[in-house]
Image 1: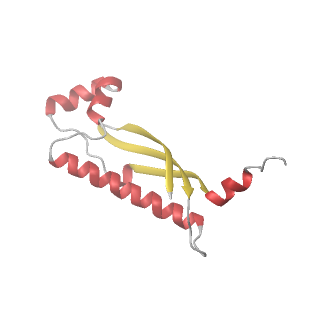
Image 2: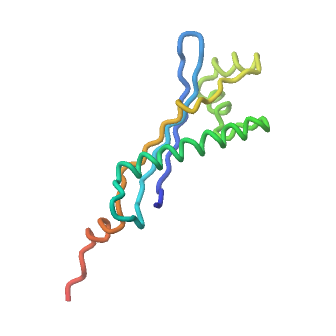
Length: 123
């Protein structure tokens, strides 16, 4: 499996007087090799869950050393400044929850389908 063209979008959502942060992650996926009987939607779901877990683990580890791996504080400072000031004064920033990480691998293609689209040169 090869993941190409990753795109990451930070989300800051105002819910009443509270703020939630989240991530939207999109990839294009290519299956290089597959065993018989493995269904693409099943692979896609497994990949999305694995990426979600790895992103969340990275976030948790960065928090342990007071890091901001996905630069939420910088994002809030630039684009949601009034919210940033409120959290900066209290020194308590919102926490990324695993369920707020949305991963999408689309389209999922197999290398054999990609190669079949390539026409052979005329003789």
